[in-house]
Length: 171
Image (cartoon, rainbow, N blue to C red; front, side, top):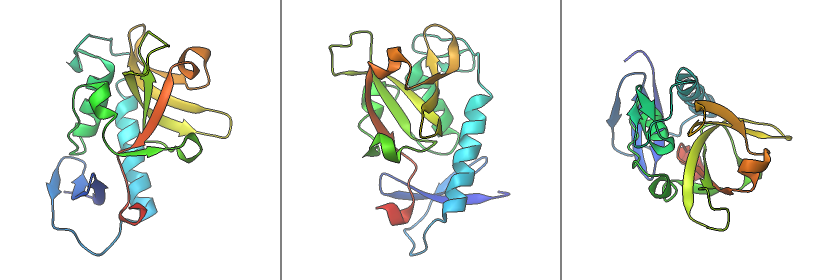
């Protein structure tokens, strides 16, 4: 493995590289911010290489993705196993306030019914500035694309942000 990064996911520590992740015993050293940032940048760059792949209901491959299939596929390339359901993914990681959001966090939305509180959609945050939160996701119209939380459609459906990729010292 050319390079590796130690990350913690739901209490499990793993060394993650470009092609493989191996679980290891918990160690007392902590992951540096620069290592985590580098891994998140790599994850987002990988996600961006899938722009314009079409939406496919139940899809989980480069032939087409649904929203949770896309998120699952991207994270699986870094050794993280997520369920193929946006609602089930919303139970993973740690809930984060919008003000604390960062690239790599998952962002969850209601489905078509804005009156429902059920999770129906998920994306990966790619950029956070004081003015907006941008995320990449698989949308029914447009496939893999970027959108902004501040657009009326997504602002009205926003439910939560969850952090899957954490550092040891954030526990």
